[in-house]
Every structure is written in structure tokens, then in C-alpha cells.
Length: 107
Image (tube, rainbow, N blue to C red; front, side, top):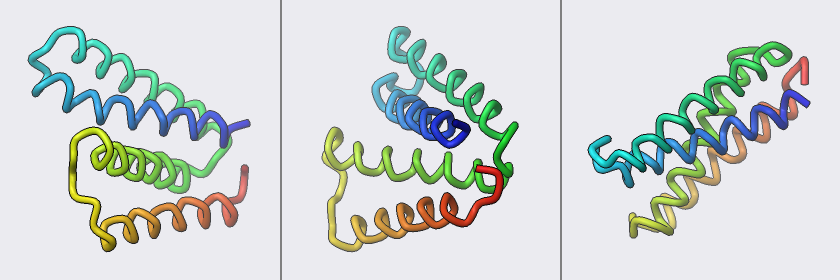
């Protein structure tokens, strides 16, 4: 169950990171509120996940989910570069996340 909570925390991390773009430097009230809420939810879920998962593994997976999701949405939503090398390195992060999940004790 902790892995599911951690994945959900990672999804909320993506939401707050993408929300930073929409909030225009936290200057737009509604997107800023959504960003802050997503950040809070992400942190609470991460805190719940580390009750049962090793903190180093949980944090690395959480940030990895956030990095992959945010980089991918940056390509789709914000017309960021989608070079083959960039996509390959996003893939390397995914491999790392899967590897940590497969080799982690306590999950």
C-alpha cells in the first residue's frame, strides 16, 4: 500500500511543479492556491509512505516520478525540447525508479 501512496505523492509533485508555470511566479491567485495545495498533499502523502518505506528510496522515487512527469509535461504542454537524448535520459530515470522499487526492502 505504501508504494501506491508514494506514487500518488509523486503525481501531486508533478501537479505542483507544473502549477508553478501556470501560477506565473506565484503571482496568479488561483493557480498559486492549486500549486500550494498540491505541494501540501504531496508532502503529507510522502510522509505517510516513509512510515513503511526506507526514506532514501521513497524520496528518490518521489523525486524521480516528479522529474519524469514534469519533464514529460513540459514537452507536451510548454513546447520544451523533445530531443532523442532528452527522452533517453527521462527513460534512464524511469529505469532507476523501477530498480529502486524492485530492490527496496519494506515495500
